[in-house]
Image (cartoon, rainbow, N blue to C red):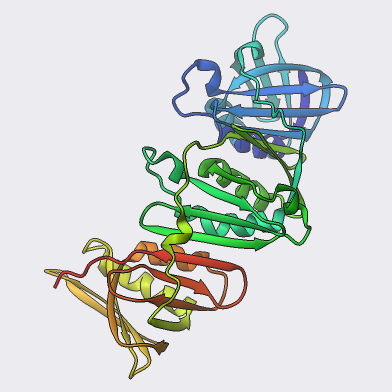
Length: 378
């Protein structure tokens, strides 16, 4: 194997696949990245795989000799990222699994492992390929991913539940304390081919998909293939494969109240700024902030009482419908939800101090963000 390419290209693509390399690999070869150079296509393909999530990427290079080898992800990544911004030459030794990196700064030799021991990425048996709108995917992931659970014991909640309708995609994520549901319109009509599909995809894989879609804007559609256990997202130069999450996803629609007794409309950025300031004080007291709705004054008060430390209070103008109410929330849950809403004005709807509240944007993407309040101890 012998090829040369710009340092920026190799570094960018190597960083991408390294994200699928496990920090504690079950076998040594999984701590490596598979590097394959093809003299026929004049391309280099890199693969990172932890036996659940696989990321593959391809880029153009000057390939003099084809070949494959796996190289240690952490070591090679650390070296390449520090090399000067110029072409680097990478060549494999004829007698042992060692590559030499050469550039104007110097030469580095790195020992790898045979590509024969590297597991193959799973193949999808289904031949049906669904084209999903890249814009609809980004919109859905931005609005839902943050609400997934990080608790590995609640395996199915660590993913996003994706449902396809005739012309829409619905993304749902919950960690048991809050729920985000995003409905995106697929104007390409390609979601119709997947109509009726209901799958739960690991959040880790979808974060990588979102990262790639944002790093390489301009792609109109993402090819999507799945079978009973695997899903593959094909973006042309990049490919992500991951195992689907097993288990019954909660019937989240029944958690959303059908009607509300109280509603307030206010400026999203104003509320976020106030919450960010008062969060400093809330951090001293379990991250809890109290919201007080005042119909007569048409205002919303945010307050924190942190005993032995102090207190904080801010007032915001708001259009309030319904009776006054004091209700408390985890300030982080509120802030994360507000950041996902895309409009300048939002609505908060609720019934009582102990029943779920719903935040929605006024206009734009249809997002429903439900968050459970925290009981106020007097």
